[in-house]
Length: 80
Image (tube, rainbow, N blue to C red; front, side, top):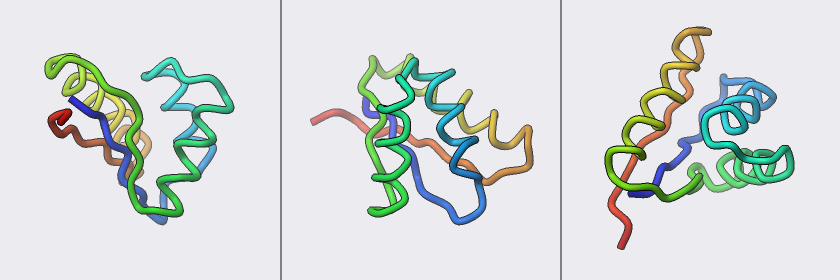
């Protein structure tokens, strides 16, 4: 499944990048690119995993935002 970052106007960009690097093992450049794409388009595919892994990572990344009081949201959808 695809893990998708949903843009919001409240979560700081630096925090989004930190979560992308920690949870999805993205490089600084990759994380910046995903964050900017989500900011411009509203959404961005982060990565593709098996269904279970995608759901776990999306939940953990979303929870990282919740823990800081941010509306950070990651969802999953089937890979076509």
